Image (tube, helix red, strand yellow):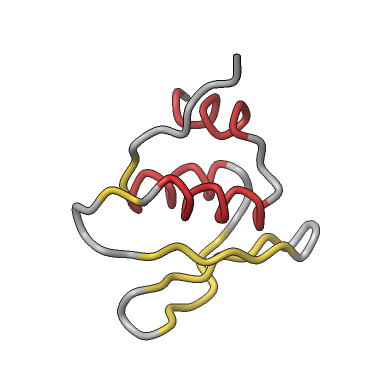
Length: 79
């Protein structure tokens, strides 16, 4: 059985993306931060709303664009 997507805030997602090699590129308006990984040119954007939980479908989209599996994401969360 595969693990469920965790209920997580944007700050925690940003922390995991930085562990995965992404760096902050720019911010689109006040609500979306764009992260970039130089090694392979991957780019993903994260909705930044203080204190709000990111919806699971949005998290799935972020992980897909970052090419991270759910298991790898959970492992990076626990480090």
